[in-house]
Image (cartoon, rainbow, N blue to C red; front, side, top):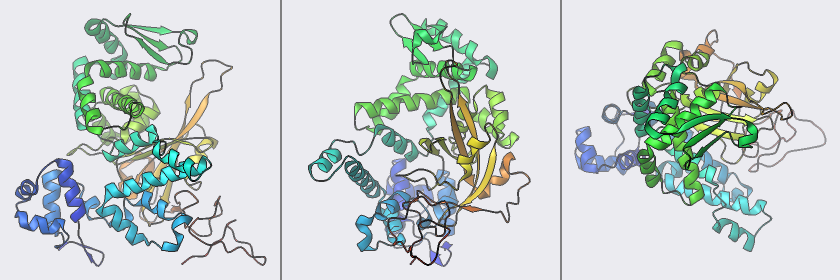
Length: 476
């Protein structure tokens, strides 16, 4: 019998979700697992615990990560829901962590609905109001922005689309380029197959655009300020859009985006994914990752891509049978605004706030272009190895100020031994820095960098002592 700590392992909701995601019946799953449909039914209703043998069968039949299946659900996907119930609005209810985890585990769609409603409430409150204003904000769809919706959809797919990976590898194989020759091969294909002329033009011609396609004259204009990697990506994007509209359309139809703006943003995101899969075909990219211990400079040199493009691609390595290190990625500006957030595995990103200031992702701006590492520990005791570096977007002219962004990558500490960036570190007994979600919901006591009191705790400020934290609070 499978045991987690001293508890039997009940995975009814997860089994149902796996089966529904695969689109198979109970009878078919029972056949795949060599058990009776009645026994599978008992497992799904949590009337029988899952045995170790059943876990192995699940992993073999559907190429699942057994560690994620057997992990304690209380440490998992209830982060967004926890943020909601930490609000002062619910303080009198005393909702316990295990209750939140239970709801998130057994009813993920209901949990997501609650999170969306809470976002609508926050939007209405920020807009000034209550009553009629709140109703309008909630009903207008403003609660979930197109970027929020697209990010949640992509994350729901674990940031991996098998059909786009196959198309990308096939297109790369047809082009037969060496990585440094991709742009030339892509230009030739656009000219020969699609009668499209590619032109590099000045910023005065494109104004604020970096790429523009004139479908009437069949001309693709690329800005002169794009780097070589940027031009290659723009060419891969145009080819992906022209040659694999059917694959993109099938995912769009399956996604059921709520409005045209969201659908358009999702389409662009999917074409970007396919362009990356063409520039960095999964098999070749995964092979270089493993041989180089995930050395990003090696990946950039091998595939002719930028640091950010390589980092983003590292979050897609979830192909069954050829999985890479499951990375998460975050991109922030110097003010702490988050503009990208992707993960191929669970990481407790804050849904309603920024990143913790104790994560040295923010320190990257002090050492531009250099990689800095850190081992962090979240409130549930999970540890992650992270490394961060700044990237710079070129300015169009001397008068235009270049923008600098920080890219943070990380993975669970148990994977760190596979990374070149962790060499020389004591991974068995590491010095871990405690981090949390946004300060408003973080319950880590005595934090000197706390910027606000947690909304579900009572302040304990007095005249006779001074805490290391500007906002000391009572703990249960």
